[in-house]
Amino acid sequence: LSFWEFAGGSIAAWVVYACGHVLLRRRCCFLDFASICQNDPELKAAGIANIPAFVRASRQMVVLWDERYFTRMWCVYEIAVAQSDANVPIRVLPTDVYVLLALGQINVFVCCAFTIVLELWTLPLLAKMLARLLALVPAFALQAKAGCTFANQDARLQEQMERFDVRSAEITLESDRTAITVSIEAMFDGSLDNFNTRVRTRLKYAAMRSLTGQRALIPYTGVLWQALPILPAVFSVWSTSMNFPLYFRVPTYISGVTQLFCLSPVCVAAAMELGKRCATGKPATGARANFVYLGIGLLVSSLYTVFMAISRPLPALVGLGRMRRLGVEAWCAVPMAVFVNGLACVAAVWAFKLRVPAEDEVVESSDDSA
Image (tube, rainbow, N blue to C red; front, top):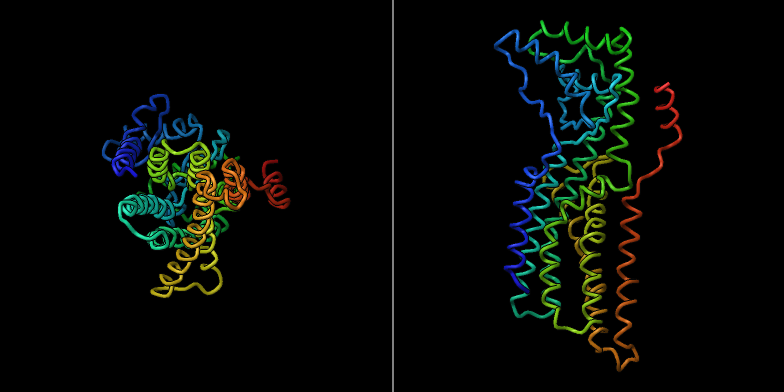
């Protein structure tokens, strides 16, 4: 295996992460962070007056949610504009969870680098498999921690929305409160209670739908983003198999695609779901919680390693003709690889397929819309 292919691919990927937005010249974002001048009254008034114009001109409003978001008056005001006649879709992203997901991606990169280096050593196959398993434990343990954090934040978000009252929101200058409340009243038929009801029903439904619209805790794209560091390692494996027979290469290609797009996302989703279940009832805390996360990481890593041992080496041996003495021809490697890796594809579809909303949720949202 080529370590330089892996390193070059990873560096290129991170450069795209850091600088790729420069190429997206047709997509503009308004980042509302300290965007209102506090020193000049005229500029301040103009800034406040134009916030609705920015929100209404947007195709989507992304909320980087923390536990103080719905307690801040200015944040609530932007929610009011988006939920008024503009009807701008709102996407809620819990910041703590996505920070853990970013750390998870770095962890996956370290595991892939370790795997590449491991191939350079002359070790028994069983020892290499055990080393790969142990290298994956911290990555999946971190996903379990993210799942537990997601469960806590999801419950906290629902609680905040159910108890939401714009009148209790905090603001630095009380003189600004009157202007904001008057503006919100004008957008919701002269009543702050109408806005409160909208947040407690329609916005809550949309936010929960965006977070838990599939069996997995987070959408497929979010999980796939973490698995991208695997891609250079997969390319490195593919490049080393170019001189092998066709029936060896095809199962290797199938296994690599499945590992990236199906197996890794499913295992991440499984670790997060198990971590979420640890948050229910009487959750573990402190060192006990860390041992629970490590246990989940060990379990999921074992399943991942076993599946990889079956889905790639076994069809590869058949493709090399090592099973002819048992009556298995080399061409059988392709259907074998398709069948085994197809199981992971089915699991991925099951985990990340969008669910149909519950009937009572649909009725509640429809009634509120009316």
